[in-house]
Image (cartoon, rainbow, N blue to C red; front, side, top):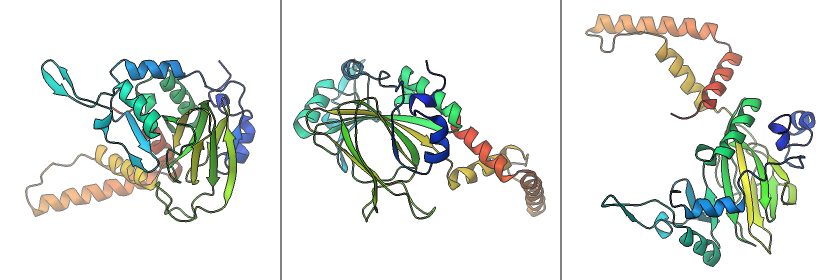
Amino acid sequence: MTDTWLSRFVADEEQFRTALWRTAPAVLRPAHPPVDVLPAAELDRLLDHGLLKAPYLGLVQRDTHLPDARFCPPRVVLGELVGGYADGRAVRALIRDEQATLLLRYVDQWHDGVRTLCRGLAAELGRQVEAFYFLTPPGTQGRPVHRDDADVFVVQLSGAKRWWVHGGPADGNWVPEREDGDPGEVLLDTVLRPGEVLYVPRGFAHRARAEEGAPSAHLSLTVREVASANLYTVVQSLLADSCELPGRPLDDAALTGAAARLLDHAAQLLAELTPADLLAVTRQVMLQPAA
């Protein structure tokens, strides 16, 4: 085990935090990258054990998602027909014959090793961290140019993948989606090989294509940052949780009294709550695992 979780992704933590974090894309070459957390042999086992199901598993072709029914045939359990469970043979056939990219979503929610990695990194960065796995056939592009609402660490596990990273959004009014317009100047054009890590700052447009010769497998760790909607939600929660009002005031006088108490309470709470406090509380809320 290395000194920190971040050191599994970056070679120089100080340089990363001061020169790259949120600022510039880069290829990183840590001494002990987490290439062993989800090896190919374990992927085969996961596909064949019969319990991996949608939406944790999906197949994509550039800008379309294949219907789950094509790789999740129905099965009978206790006399009932159930669906959604992946069939390993069907998944492999679609990857081989139709050049589909395998996408495993939120791997941190169901894989012990990946969960440990994500929680360790989240504790150090003070941000929510999630994980996604991509297996892309040779010479194909799994997704179009897009922007993610997260900083991303791409860990190349096997094969090789060429990445193009463009600049970040011009202002704060952007949305994480496909980039149909001009994504701007290419800031980084690189081929990522096993053991190397690509860092893409939040909102920077990017795309990738697997190199010829062998499939590309990589693990993407997304580091989620607070958005304005998260701040609104936390403020609303603080107001609701700390002010006791009758559920259904009976008349206008009672309604007016409840409104007055709520406004007084909100004014006092907001006067005591600093912007830094609100940001810290919101990040802490996002770190909590989903119930």
